[in-house]
Image (cartoon, rainbow, N blue to C red; front, side, top):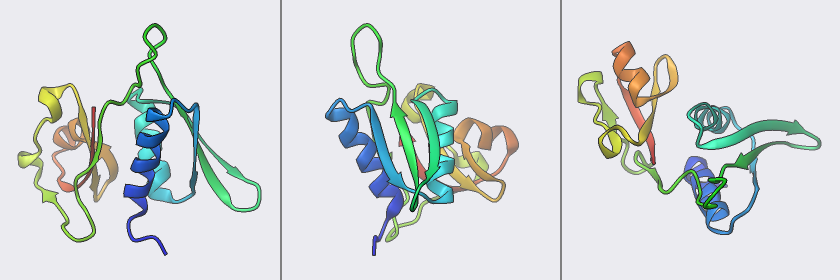
Length: 131
């Protein structure tokens, strides 16, 4: 049994970027797929798709800079952990790296970026920070 599947997902992505891999394969869950879709929408990943052969898995295509080969993600950090949950009100949502990064927040309206949460005036649990 895995204690924190979201931290496992973030670690797999981080490790794959360090090893210059093209894809990452993850066990499927709704929250992981939601996180992956946000990362694709914000252009940190190239693609995220679900395959259902024997067990459903998520395949993430990693994105690198075409000229330098640098990864699109330089830091991927879990903020709210199972032992220490971190909740914020909409007015308390800070900017990540002065607005150059983003935080992914789990709100009553679903997963969204920190900009969307501020715009919709909803707070929630800060899942992770990306830049």
